Length: 119
Image (tube, rainbow, N blue to C red):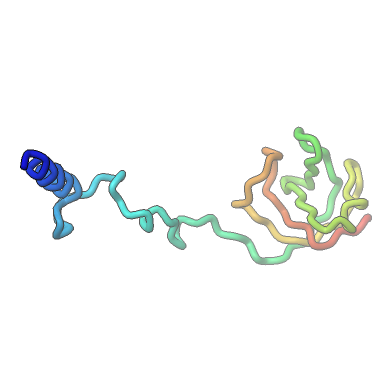
């Protein structure tokens, strides 16, 4: 009988901590539903889908393997384009900015390169 009373008391206290069974009361942040943590359109970093062309001289970043063109971090996924991308090369690149993309280079705005041409 004591076990039954203790269980009832524990359930009663837990219900109060969560605002009761009717959903009333104020829930603390730890008790917030997981769906409230999903970013909304307003909080997501916008992705630039417009294509741009940039010309200049590639410079090496402070991290190994990082290449910059002005303030753009060149992200080259197509292996066929890599030979033209070297420190000191004068190039014209086409692609799009990805300001929200995470990188290990710590410099520049990520720029996804879709074409590169030596000048």
